[in-house]
Length: 363
Image 1 (cartoon, rainbow, N blue to C red):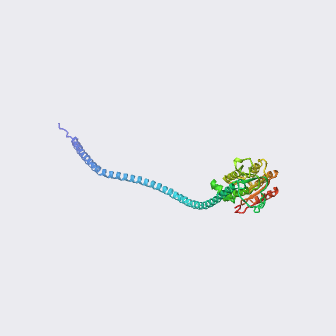
Image 2: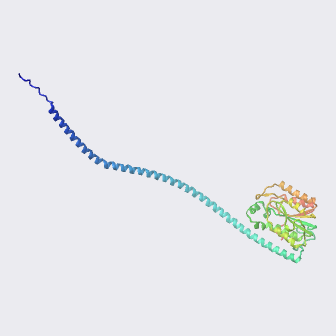
Image 3: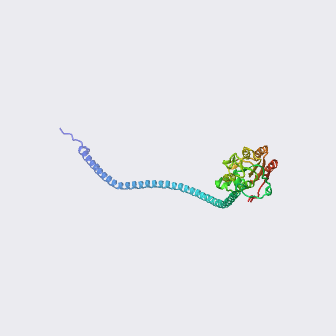
């Protein structure tokens, strides 16, 4: 039997094996080639990437430093503004200090000039007191100094220095250190107690007191000082009459007046009331003042003219009720226009006297 001839198969097992082997070799070759390329690319990229990282890091550092510099610049600007403001303030303060220094220098020069004048006044007062004491020892209790007059009326002043019992009322208020309210308020606020006691106007008033006591014809004397309150000049003879011939007691009362410092207001009514506590009562009151009664508080006169007039009239009525003659020596305070006419009328009404002394009286 004739065999059938088998058909030829192109894609047989052997062929497929060859194809697969070839394809596998190609793949293997590709894989090996790709790995080498990857390693080559990795070796090339890594340094570039590191450089980029370094550049990025430097950029970040630069930005951070720039921010810090900007912040520091803002702080410096703020400090500069503060320094400029402080410089302006210091400049203004320096100008103010220079102005104050100039003012103080002017004030110091004025005070020095005033102090020299005060020292001259003090020396003159000391000399006068020394002369009074010498004359007192020579007269052995008589008049402290010799004054020429015309019987019982001194032709210079018109004051009658008669009567058996006389009291001198000395104004010791703050205003007695100067001739105007503005001057005494400024001087009183800055002066020491010694400067207040030796103020030129104050010394003139005390000189007047010495003159009155030295020329008095009264057998009995007393000295009362008054500011806001009234008191006897010498505590040792308070409430008692001083015999005119008792030179030591009279001098002690005068010394007490010279030691007193001006202060407060002027309560004339209290002074007259205190004088009337003496027994027997005085028949003459000699008032040495620079104006009508006043109320002095905090460096200024607060009361008005109506208040001062009423206080003065109460004091006058008290003296008139006791039949006491009122004598006034007025060292006028500028602006106190009512003092002179009120005192003149009171002196006329009580049988007393009134005068305003010249600048050099009683020297």
